[in-house]
Image 1 (cartoon, helix red, strand yellow):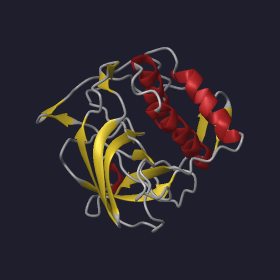
Image 2 (cartoon, one colour):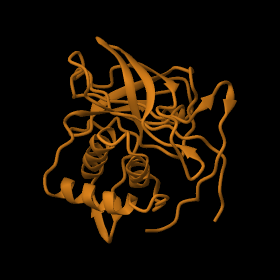
Image 3 (cartoon, one colour):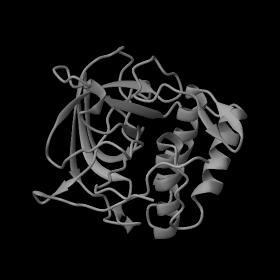
Image 4 (cartoon, helix red, strand yellow):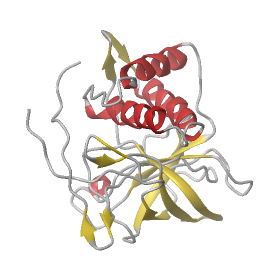
Length: 227
């Protein structure tokens, strides 16, 4: 298996006001608690979200392993609720897991379920790693399991989504490079869990990979393989 250099960021989903395709400014400001696994910093990371009445600073959870983002390099993003997608999200294909095909909406509800679990376990390194890789594995087509529990968490997340769980408190911030040939590839997509009164869980956006202290942190991860 090939490995490619990169740095990871994970995020927590932020909620904003229900404005379709409204623009927000996101900025990755830190690598969270600095936990590293399989050669990468794992989610959640520290960042800010501003615009449309939102002024958030806190955990951001990355759901996008295969794009790069950098510290202190702000980017624009649109936002939607993980539980009520509006078509602006980065990943728009159904997800196959364990022989079952899940809709895009179910996949983002599963990601929201995992994002909530991740933030509840930031102090437990092994559990944090499991949740981080489970979130990445939802959309990157891999089944990397460095701490031995990611696959079980993915299974539980999809089961919850199939059983009706809706991630209404998670916002999805999707990068929007207005002048870029590939607008959604200017950064990673991030999830922000509602954590402040001024943030409403109806919007979300952003994706990223890190540049730490002006130096790109490089580490590898296995290329996608079938489940």
